[in-house]
Image (tube, rainbow, N blue to C red; front, side):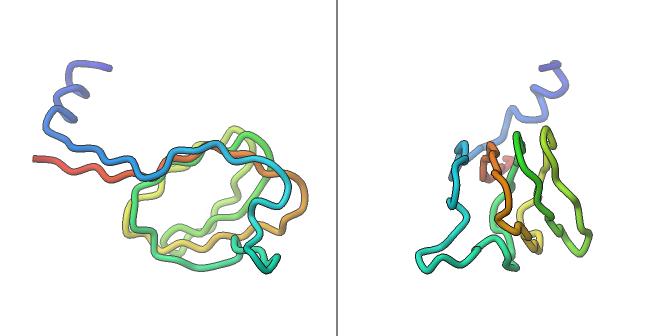
Length: 103
């Protein structure tokens, strides 16, 4: 990290809420077998996703993105999101949900 970048985060407070690697068949289904990925939401946290396998669509603040393998995505806190995954094929991804406060 450069000295300038280190100074940028020197007075910050980071709270990580979730950091996971997700893989396997059927993890995107709810208790009734419905695909919970086909939903709209307001995202409370900042998030970083790194997809390793599979494809899905993600709408961030009214702009659709097609996410494929080896794609890194940043989602700012407070964004309106729409997730779309048809459940066909596998989906493997790393993700972290966090807050970052300064001062």
